[in-house]
Each structure stands twice: as structure tokens, then as C-alpha cells.
Amino acid sequence: MIATKDKVVAVSYILLVDDGETGMRWYETVTEQDPFYFLYGHHNLLPVLEKALEGKSAGDSFSVFIDFENGYGDYDDSKRVIIPKANFKEEGKKNRDLLRVGNVIPMQDDKGNHLRGEVLKVDYMGVHLDFNSPLAGLDLQFDGKIVSIREALPVELEHGHAHGPDGHHHHH
Image (tube, rainbow, N blue to C red; front, top):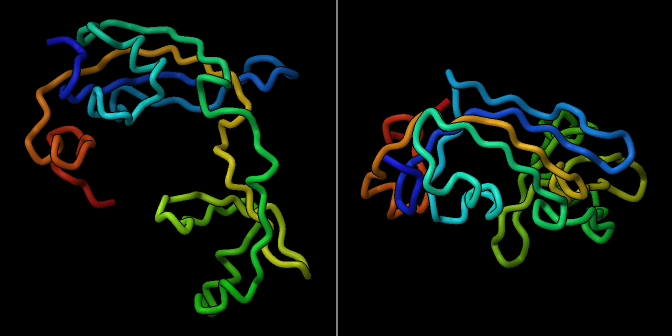
């Protein structure tokens, strides 16, 4: 079976990143024991990465370099925002744990898009959040292997994404 639209593809990989200054550094390892599952052809992957997997079979390896323009875009200063601390008040006591520097807070914009804001600092002005992807502005190098390929289940096609190894949601 080959990687093509409506197949669930599992990949293992090592991701290296380069910020253009310090050279390539390790960012993430996804093992064959716990691979990343995605539904092919449904915009769940960077297009360049998906293209590199096209037509490959389980056991095939891949190596793809993606510059930041084709990755997660350039770092955008306008995506750094300050939100008044009062906006987080209803969280009550959880608040203090929530607003630790380095925490990532899931939020929604006015269009209902899911955003992830990383807390940069908290001061008298409010909570400084960075909504850039952690991979913004970085060139990416994926070296990996296709672990398995299977037909997608109807529910996965309906939802537009893979549900793990056997098509069932696993709640952690």
C-alpha cells in the first residue's frame, strides 16, 4: 500500500531545525514504537513534507528539507500580544500555575481558530503571549521512515484526521 489520499500513514522521524545562526540542532524525535499518524491529503501536514511521502510504502525512508517560508513562516512580531491579567481571572487559583513563563495556553481568536500562546512574561501590563509557532522562522530537516499505511476509516475521513494506530481515539 502506498501513501496517497485517504490513507492513514504512520511516520517516525528526527526533526532538526536551523535558525540561520547556530546551524542545525535537534528538535524532536518520534520513534517507530510511538509514531505520528496522519490522514494523507487532508492538510494535516506541511505540504512539502506530504509531497515528499507521496507514493512511498511502509519501510521506505524519507529525508526532506523545508525552508521556513514553506514551513511555519517567518517569525511575526505582531503575533506577540499583551492580554490583561483580568482576562484570566475566572481561572481563579489555577491562574498562577497557568501563567508561568514557558507555559502554552490554548486560546481562540474571534474567528474561532485555535491558537497556542506561549507565556513570555507577566508584568504590570498583563500577560505577554507569543502566538508564533515554536517552529516559526526555522528551516526544518525531517529524516524519517514510513512505519505503516492503512486505509482510513469512515469516521476519520469524516473528521478529516487520523485517530491513532487502529482508528480509535485514545484518551490520555
